[in-house]
Length: 132
Length: 132
DNA sequence: CTTGACCTTCCAGTGACTGGAACTCCTATC
DNA sequence: GATAGGAGTTCCAGTCACTGGAAGGTCAAG
Image 1: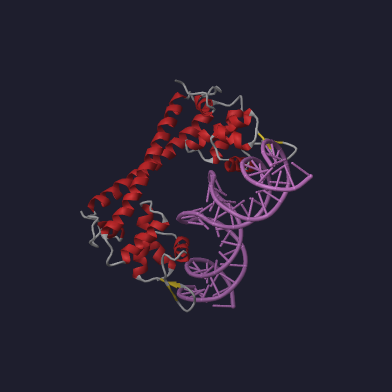
Image 2: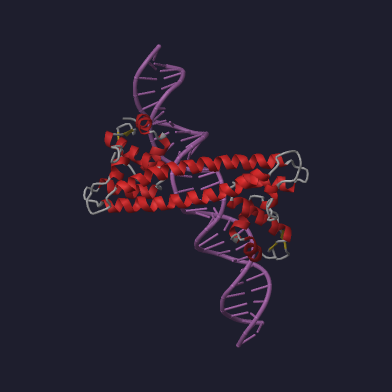
C-alpha cells in the first residue's frame, strides 16, 4: 500500500512516516518506481508508534518499546519499568503545570481587566508581589 | 555589571541572557572592551522574563507582556486577556496529561512486571486492548 | 497529450535554548 | 614583563519531533 493509505489508516501524516523511516523506526519495501510499499505489519508498527507517541513516550522510548515488542522472549518487567518511569515524568509535569495554573489563576482573579493601567499580573511578574 | 553577575541575580544562565539580547528582548549597553554592561533596569527586565517564562509564557507572550509592562497607558484588560488565554492553554495541557496518566497508570497496574513475556502494556499499544 | 493527484528527495525552519570551539580581555602572581 | 586563570566575546551546530516548501518523477483518467 502507498504512503497516503497507510498514513490514513495509521492516523499519521505521510511526512511523519517518512521521518520515522529516516530515523530507522520502520523499513518499508520499495517498488520499482521508488515508491514506498507498506505491508500490514508496517501499518501495525505505525499504529503502535502512534499510540505510544500519543501517550507521550519519546521517540527513543518508542524505539525501546518496539524492540521489546518484537522480542518474543522479553520480560514484561522491562516494559513496565519504561512505562513507570514515564508515568513518574508525567506526574511531575502535571504537578508543575498545576502550580503554574494556581499562580496564574490567582493573578487573573486579582486583575480588574479594565481600561485602567493598574495590573497585579504585571506587578507580580515585576517582583512586587500580587494583591496579597 | 557583567553578564555573570546579572545572570546570578536574575537566576538565568548567561547563555540565555545573550540569547534574549539576540532576539531583541533586552538591549544592554556595551563597554569599550565589548563586554555587555547591565544596569539595574536590565536586571529587572530579566527577572520579569524569568518569572514569566517559569509561568510557561512563550517568548512571544513575554515580548507582549514586556511591551505592556513598559507602556504606562496600557489597559489591564490587555494583560488579563493574555494571561487568561495562557491559563486556558495550561488547563488543556493538564487535561491531556491527566488522560495520558490515567491510561498509562491503568496499563502499569495491569502489567505483572515479571520475567514472563506477557505484557498488557505492549498488547494495548499494539491495538489488542488491555486487560479489560 | 495533458491535467492533476500522488510520489520522491532535499533543505530549511520551528522554540528556546545549550554545548563547544576559537578567540580576546582582565587580574593576580612571580 | 611573562604567565596563568578565569572572565568575556562571537559563531556554528545540535537538541526534539516534526513540518513546510521547492523541484522533479510517476500514474490514472479523460
